[in-house]
Image 1 (cartoon, helix red, strand yellow):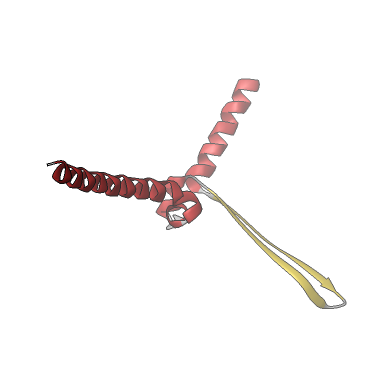
Image 2: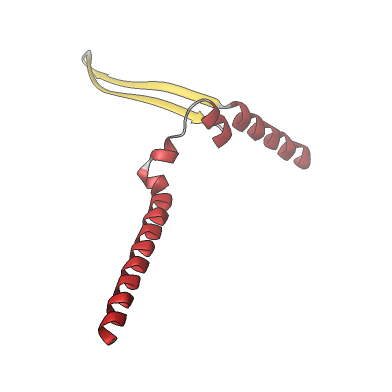
Length: 98
């Protein structure tokens, strides 16, 4: 029964990630007919491919998640600037030595 059950769990997870699962709920706290707090909960569980298919790709533009790509690009620009400055310095030094 153990292997069959784990296979069933894998199938369920595969289906959830493929199709997506949405959980939505609202929590409201009232005191004497005065609304004190409202919490709206929306949870979407799906694969990255499915999320992109339905138009959700916030992780591509969120600085926290895209920071590595930006950092790598900035590092490349700094390396190019450093190489250009080193080349200028080498030219200046070669002119002053002559």
